[in-house]
Amino acid sequence: MKKVTLYKYARADGGVTVSPLAPPEGTPYTGSCRLIADEGMLITSDGGIVYAVVDTDAADGWREIPDAGKGG
Image (cartoon, rainbow, N blue to C red; front, side, top):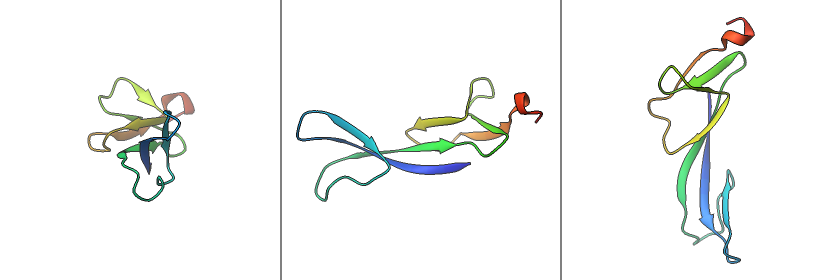
């Protein structure tokens, strides 16, 4: 499973950006992460609902399981 740090921040035009690229220096932001399942795997936190990619506040509690639809 790959973990990508995300940055969420308000832009000067009033919009909001969520990006793996850090905001301009001095811009306040909140952090989260994007979890990307490895080939043939899916990501779950509860064993029921599964994702190939999920954005979440923290990686704790998430795990990979074989993708049954891919013969896993």
